[in-house]
Amino acid sequence: MLKHGHSNTLTMPYAPYNKICRELGCKNSRSKLNSFCSEHGGLEHMNEGKDNAYSNPAWQTIRRAQLSKQPLCQSCLTRGHVNLANHVDHVFPWRHIGEQAFLHNLFQSLCINCHSHKTGQERKGIYEHYTHEGVQPLTKADYGYNMTQWNKNGA
Image (cartoon, one colour):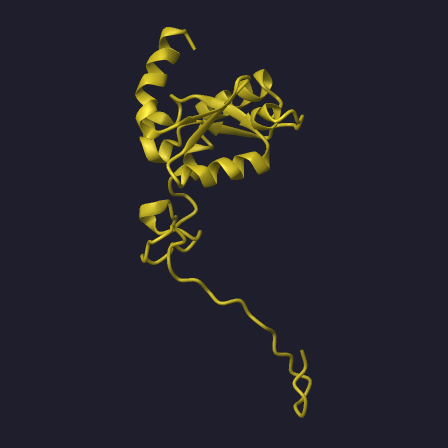
């Protein structure tokens, strides 16, 4: 917008910069690279945490196998929709469980929108597993039991 009575200097509006973590109730300073503090998953450097984990060759193998086995979004299918999956989701978010849960987990194929929705639910402590029977809500406490069952079934 041009200011009247001045030279052709443009003054652009700006959005306020939120300096605190976006986790509900948290007053910590946010990290440099996303809107959470380090306690809630914020990153200060691009090479921290999950960025390195997702470039792991073992993860790449798991991802390819999952998308080959289930190329459609499992969440959409529970609602009668058909969408191509482009994300492989950890049913139990490994950052909440521990590093061992990165490669040892239940995985599901999701589209971008459903993966975003599920991530929002995880912030509330709800982990959603989409099956042919519908949505199975899980919690952090369900991880051990589910991994025991997964191992017994030879997955």
